[in-house]
Length: 221
Length: 221
DNA sequence: GTATGTTTCAAACAAGTGTTTAATAAATTC
DNA sequence: GAATTTATTAAACACTTGTTTGAAACATAC
Image (cartoon, rainbow over all chains, first blue to last red; front, side, top):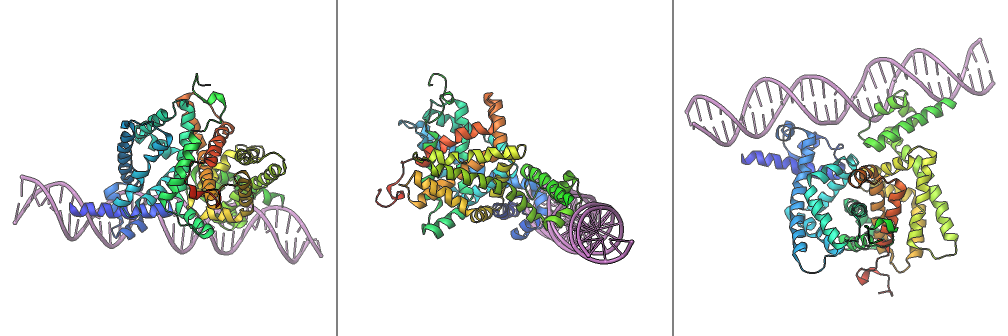
């Protein structure tokens, strides 16, 4: 029993790193099992299929992340001060950086996985994630509404996905951007600093009022 | 001679559609050549390898797009009024929508390809594109600097990539988002409308002043 | 009309893919 | 401690992948 868990985790550990680095379909079960130092057949034994393994890798992060995020959102909801967009976005930070304590480089790997999953089947996994973690997304949306009640739901939907796009895209490719930043400007920035620049950017974007009147909720226009 | 061009284009046409829909490594040469109704070997004959085919598909769009973009940027640069971030971002619109005239659904396919290429090797193609079309990016950056001279280069670099992320990510997955928009809010939006919402969002984000002082250029802080 | 260069084609190639099998080993249960 | 469930293993399976081959068809030039 103690050993079977070990095998399962060895596979997950090796898989997530390779998936993040090279993509899902570019990573074969043979290199995964070789890196994990387990038998090839054990993937199908423990996970059933490669597809299920991908989901398992994905879920291990998502569950941890969404749990932390939920408790962070509850905190913001319970406080007395006014809820701002910036505060809502900041609920993402701790849960994300927290992953580094669970797993070395965890936040980096997680964002890369997210980026790949997002682009992989262009929308299918996006939908899947939006359904599987719909309660988290709903809560996040509700918080955003409290911060910007003047926005009508459809407009908020679009702005939410603009933010998601910038967030995931930037952090998924943060390593390349960090390299450029260092070579071109001599600035060494870590993930935390990237987020520190990203959040004001997104807050301002989300809160912008430079829009056609019909994008506001009824009565506000 | 007239036939070899036709074969080449049939391959490119079939390939770009399949690449956009299913991804690069998920699309085999056999389904490409089947859709194009040409012989399997003709891909290697005309393009050398699958990798070169991918680049050819990508370049056919990029060249058309960047040419239009350059002339659009020259226009903005030549006008007398003040250059705003919004104006700079709007230089992207016509070149993008123009593609629909060259090829049905062209802008949609192009953005999907961009999204895939961006995520595929996480940064490698990003770097490749930034080098191959560095003159375009440099011109775009120069325009942005004219619009926001108070931003120091490194801060502009980050904000530029925040915008790129939101832009490419949103438009690459626009179909899924459009479906949700229709089913959840009953709103049918086209690419043009998405961009119309995106640009004010990005302008506000890019122009935000809610940042630590050390992110501004020397003397401004 | 022969010769030259270009393009198409069916077939085969070598390598890699996820998955399954049946035998062995290990752990757990009664 | 024998019986039974659970885990590991090497091997094979059936299939797909990108690429190459060599002959045939076509076009062009002299």
